[in-house]
Image (cartoon, rainbow, N blue to C red; front, top):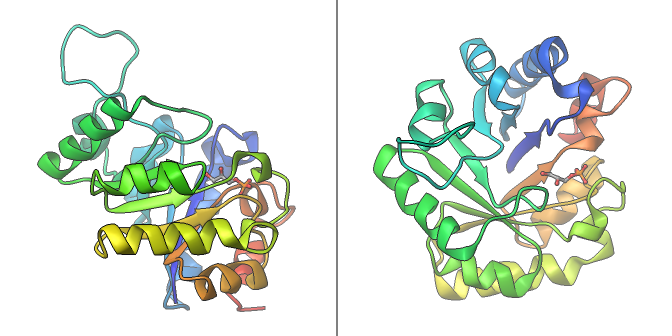
Length: 219
Ligand code: G3P
């Protein structure tokens, strides 16, 4: 049993009505497994999906407090819309180390779960020192390829887990990039990860519900 966070990104297949449909599938599958399954839709779909009863995470939060900023989103805003937490520093939305630190601390203050993405073992170590709830290591070159990190670069997962647990055993480790099948997921857990962060394998699948059932081993 592990953690599965599905990032809807800005895929057309993961926005608006499509996002709702995938979230409903997640809800029905969650009842049948012990895995914790959550989704990370775009900001505009956050509150509607939260109302369905699925745990939602934002894909990004800006490292700012309320104030004179335009087109920005604060931690308080996503919390108010029903988010349990947010991804921070995704490869497609990178931040500076000081901004990551700011957000991790701010999330602790407002009561949000921090899932900080990293791209290799060294950045994973650096982020673990900041004590987020989760670190999610994702080699950028494998993102969206369908080539699973747990098979193509198992040492990145294993070494990240080892480094994080040496520094602070309370920080949980996810891995991501190319995770699609049950075998990819199980392999990630065998390597010591607490779960996976994934996107295209579910969101862009012809039948996302079937793909998720397969991922968790119901098919
Ligand atoms: O946030 C998850 C992501 O970057 C991995 O994407 O499509 O390789 O599962 P994907």
